[in-house]
Image (tube, rainbow, N blue to C red; front, top):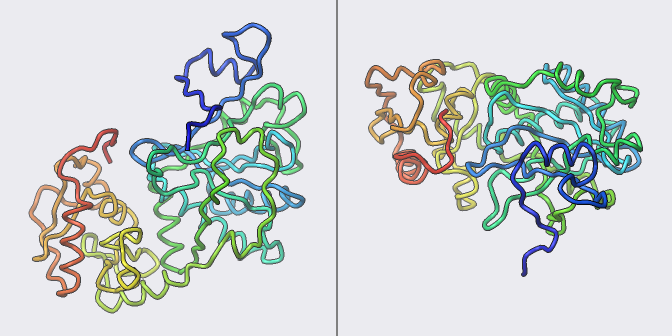
Amino acid sequence: MGECPNQAFIAVSDNQIASHLRGADQSRSGGTEFVAGVYPVLADETCWFLAADFDGDNWSTDALAYLETCRLMSVPAALERSRSGEGGHVWIFFSQRIPARDARQLGATLLTETLERRPELGFASYDRMFPSQDTLPKGGFGNLIALPLQRRARDYGNSVFVDNDLLPYRDQWTFLASLSRLTPQAVYELIGEAEARDRVLSVRMPLADDNGDEPWRQSPSPRRPTGAIIQARRGQGLFRQRVSVLERRCRITGVSNPEHLRASHCKPWRDCKNEERLDGENGLLLTPSIDHLFDRGFIGFEATGALLISPVAHRPSLERMGVNVSERINVGGFAEGQRGYLEWHQEYVFLRSRRTGDAQS
């Protein structure tokens, strides 16, 4: 396949932002329309925001129900009417960048809670999450989302943030300034609690034809059966049960209340053979913050039970997250099957040196 002729990778500058807000390219004469978009997933597979996309006949009902769930769960969120006026995006901004995987898990948690509260809705208008992938596709950037507040769309009352009556806020900038950003700790607590109760649905990956580089020109997505959009992660509950046979508490913090523990894969799901994905020996019960450190390779375990701390880990942060970095810690022995998975984690996940683009945890 050749390169997309519509690609234009332009460095972010005040001029580009002004062009987007004014709706015309400020560097060219003739008023050429200018629309800025962003690829949510960064080079280190983290992101600064999560956006849920709704379009179709019932988009506003579904989006407002999702927005209400955000409020009930103390998640700051904002609803934007899309450029077409036939859909909307619910935006959540983070105080620090977090793994795209965790952002999408948060979105799945919010979708699950909304469906639990409002089962009559069906959520046929839900289309996708941005970021649309947990990891960057090989040779690509993931899915592009058009940024809000583009002038020509605003002239028609679109691409603006709206209230519960779908009316634009009088001062968009004041509204955005009042919107808090969600902390990583809050994210991990929310998804950790949801997984502990097996209340997480998986969100669909984009279809092959969803990779257009001009989302502002796309018509609303064709309706898909809800079952093809969101599928229950029945396997997660079975995996957790099997892990719980071997593990009864978080080996770092000592927390044993199931409501505060996540079933964490030693060998990540995406790298597993089918029989490994639900193997209880491929898991540990960890609190959300420890799960984050283990999943990202900032900590690991020797087969003997010795805790490994990556030389690139930010030790003051680890201390605040419940890891005593001043002493040698042994969390106890592991079963034979667990040791094999932990060796795989140590070889392929544990960080022995800084990867380009990584931020300190």
